[in-house]
Image 1 (tube, rainbow over the protein chains, first blue to last red):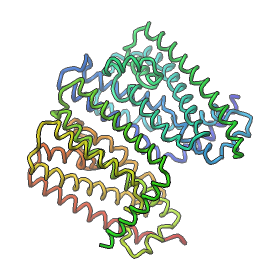
Image 2: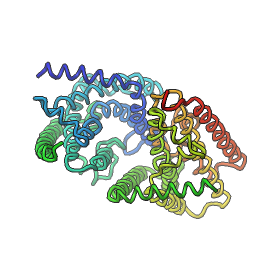
Image 3: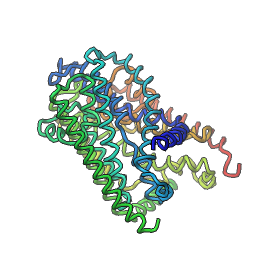
Image 4: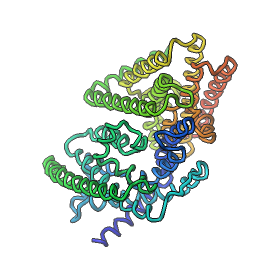
Length: 265
Length: 261
């Protein structure tokens, strides 16, 4: 099995490498809104001294960490899979004796991530020099604790994204559905604003949803703002969501496949 | 007048396309409303934590959101669909058919494909601007309103010119098909007043990819922060940009060698 993953990695890496010129454009997309929100909130914090206890540096460190976490937990499944379901090219992959999503699509995601990450790092360093955040609260152990949290966030995002994409077996409007999902995620994940600045009611909802594992939770760990008892509690909740996402994905995939063969694609 | 007639025909054709996919049109409008809701929630979160953002009140930010959506609408309704088709047509040579027609090729490329349902977006944007201005306290000076309108037109022309230059680059670099992403990516910065950005970013979105010129600056005109001379400068810049863009386009068309090569 490991051998299969390694080979798929080689194929997907080579494939992604072909499009390296476009990467900068994608990254730009990724970078702009966090930088915009960073500017908005630091302006407010500077004018008022602090917002709800958060200083300008708290916002800078938050959004700078977010840039990296967001990229690591992001999922591109819909872009690499939906069209295969729609035009029937998935058939070729179904012939292989491995699960096409949990192998090929997953590895494709990782290859894309690795490549964009390589380009992101120098850009991040430039932003670091421009904003000079004070990262003195970050410790080695907070970064090490964040790694499983990031992996968890990616796992949930990937499985939910795959489940959503598999709705393409039923509807041609899967891209519209994904936009709703994306809007929910960007509000509840902490992409727009650190969740503690949300109205209390929305905070309580966000606390139970899976989206905070994409950004807010790992970022808070990196910044050393999660007390140990909360850490355990949240990891447990994250694992529960991972299990739910997995079951949901397997179920939609199985039912979808039945339809796929039924239309004779 | 021929071009007005043509636009009329384009609108009709595109209306028919939209009506053929009624459910899609409805879904698109729903998604659009959802994003509007999202943006308003965003603003309300900001203003639940502060009274002003760099001196701008909630009403002014709603008006800015309206201008932003207006410019964004023009991009997605007119510019995006045209670009998608244009890039392929340079690559596979089907641009021949456009160039053969006895009308200005730039005009055809720009307006042949329009997402007609976006008219809804236009109405919404205007409503936001009106509500925002009302909300920010009273009617603005009529001269400022006049400046505002002129500056919006100038801003749109400048962005349109930049777009022409970007897509015309395809004539020289055939594989350069992500050219417009840079515009779309930086677009997000237009949602907030340009004064909140650090100087380097302000320079980028004002001079390099002039999103702010089309969003923040008109609003500053409305607030009375821009005088008559500056408005004249913006008109001059817009006309110059358009002139340069058409020259680049013509040079590009001369460079284009057709399908058979």
